[in-house]
Image 1 (cartoon, rainbow, N blue to C red):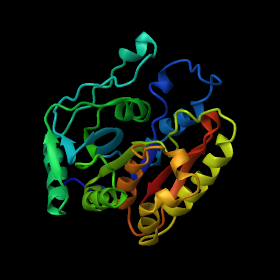
Image 2: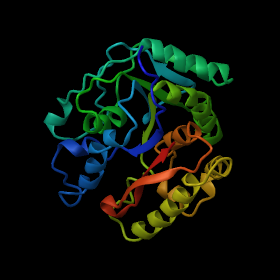
Image 3: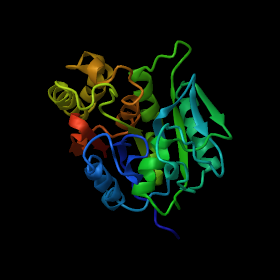
Length: 274
């Protein structure tokens, strides 16, 4: 008889800028994303065991309802522009998991959340770029889940925290839940005077919130827009909201910052919830 899987954590990770880990970076020093790449390379070694599967929420997929991809062989979506030709030839042939996708959809629907599925959705660059670094063998099934933008196109932090709570039981089955985004995402502010200090202050607040136990963590994250320089760090919140899913899927214990850096003068962090 196979041993029961060990409980996996939930994670919020930075996916960098475009295909940044697979090219010579030209928007700053050549090693701009090196620390992030090294963090991702070591990520699998920090897990209790090899995950049975991954459920990944990317800041690059929005739908009116939480939408899960049930594709068996998800293609890559090269949703970045103006990068070198070879970055549009990258491969990462991880399989999907239609059975797990249906489980994800059911858990969301049973929690009263709007849930749908796509049989064709592939891996956008918020999925395949960081995971090609973290899991280069591409041999673990991956199910992707959209953000839920609602009819007005708004991304509600409380709703995404609730989605994480609905998906938390999957962790007991050896499924790693990953929010892929950026804790700072203001493309016009990188390497600009004043960015470093404002980004640090927002990052410090975000870390205090993530490292709080429940229910304080959820209460703070629902109010993220009241944090220092919040709208400077996130003129729109789609790259932050995956954190809400990861935090919601965490236990009542405090989260932990597991990575930080300042590429292009902007503080970014990654968080783990056990």
